[in-house]
Image 1: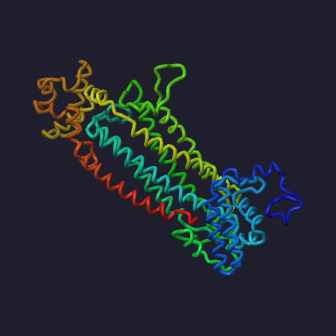
Image 2: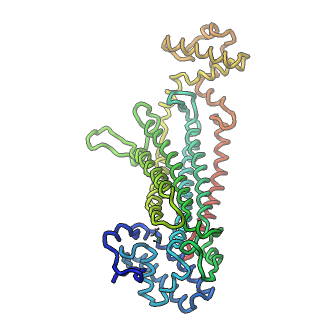
Length: 475
Ligand code: ARG
């Protein structure tokens, strides 16, 4: 009859189409290392607790290690009729070592097994995401350090607002990524909980030692409640939520880069090696990477929604619906990792077109706040100063000039407080220089922000190294 592992109760083997529909091996084979590490820890614990014999324990251990070698050598054929990675490995083990293989699943269910594998997988991969965040942040810091004093227009409502430093803009993304880093460490912390020993849902009749498995797999804690342990997918939801927010950050960056590469802005130039051309229009140089990252943000946020809907209304404990957790997780993970990695390169290859930026800030009214601020510093209430500056802008627009083109006498007509010194306060350099408040855009303040960023990065590197070492599988 069928190869299935529950043959006892059934008079027929599984319909082939039904089996294809319900099998997960095509994607969950990706967790073979986690599955084997989990089984090794489980078998060692069973042996230590006297639930299986030392002889069986040793056979299981050697057999699992052999399977690991086979899979890594590409000598293992995965069978769809064996449904998933757990049963593929267990079946092969039993073929290889006989009866002892049939004892591995004592005091365990695939429900706690799959939860264990996914925790191990997510924990380890989260540390890879952390490393890629750090690499992109380093690229941002390096770019900011290289172009420290370049001035560009800052926008609100996509209308010229106030001049800022290019490095200030880059460091905004650095800080966004620091929050992403922190969110992913939170994902790690919540995934760092050991579900094995929950059994199918209610625990087990065997005198197992969950702490033993916890120590072997280096988990910070153990699920307190077996029903919760097999039902919980919060750690996946959190991963998808953190991934969605990260992708939204990259998508905003993408949108800005796409705009600023356009002829209309011409503020940055991407490396030729990072762009593509058109098969028809010879002049084109397209920012495909940014467009793709912006586009891929949709699928990652989609997986978050999909998983939320999968668990919404799902009764405890395991339901097959939960098998839907993996494809979204894997694809979101790959998308996030790839996006971060390409963006590190994009940032390193991106150059500001300093002249265009400088021209842009000289030919606009983004110094109008500074004109008002000057009046305030000479005694006028801000609300009145705002009105005076607004009138100056209106006059310039009517006469086709900029604030710096007005004469002192013209300004005095608007407010008697004006004198010659106002002009030095409204150059783009002064606008930037004078915004020396904490977090502001002045070069001095940027030096402080960048020194701070170095500390942040050093701390993140230490955290990442520690978590990556913790998450290493004992294989
Ligand atoms: N392939 C399943 C999953 O990914 C493993 C758990 C199956 N458990 C069960 N009782 N059918 O969720």
